[in-house]
Image (cartoon, rainbow, N blue to C red; front, top):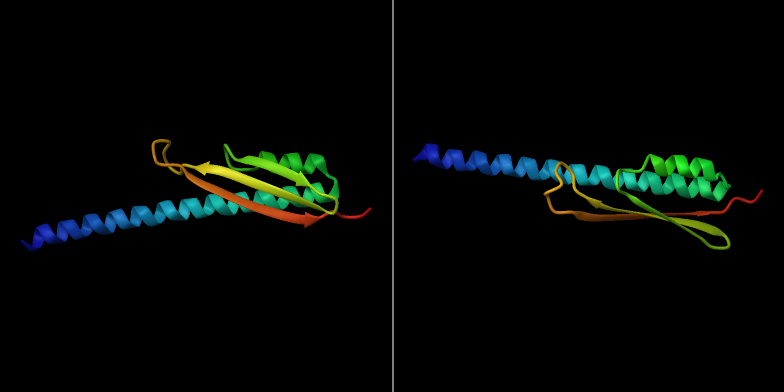
Length: 105
């Protein structure tokens, strides 16, 4: 009787560990999107469009990068339908933004 309860407890622990690892993978994807948004915004604020394109190329796969320019600032939004580990898992929408003031030359 104790063996069956212990087996169920181990299954629960294993499932919990997998869930935590999946959440950590999502957080790492979100951090990567935030880094991309910040770098693209800085490069665009400097007027370095080639550098911004290199930063966009380093974005996570299937991430959508949008650049919005106003008079004094550049805002970048990075969106991603994250599916860490497998394409059959549900997609988690991730979105992050960065805004930088335009540098005067």
